Image (cartoon, rainbow, N blue to C red; front, side, top):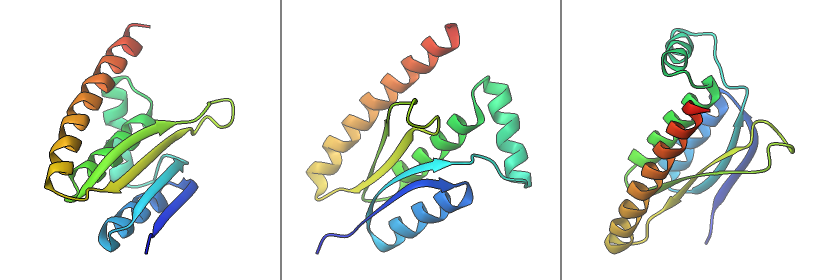
Length: 128
């Protein structure tokens, strides 16, 4: 039995709730969040963090979500995107289950490489 969840334009808190539900139920998922923001103390903290890092709020929130997925035992986090001309909310957060311990080791190496690549992209973006 193969189960998965796909959500396009999952607004704000809904994206967080879907990630939590999928990880709890051990389901692979691909979520394209939108409407990044919330009118709460957490939302204010995230806005302050985004301003401090000189990054868009949506990027900070999606990176936070990426970290949640990546820290979930048995999951590999991936970040993909589609053409921004289709939608400016074009990031896709993916969570897939690891199959065995060796896959987990390979996934960890891929994560380290992906995070290094992501860090380089942010540094380049900050210089533009």
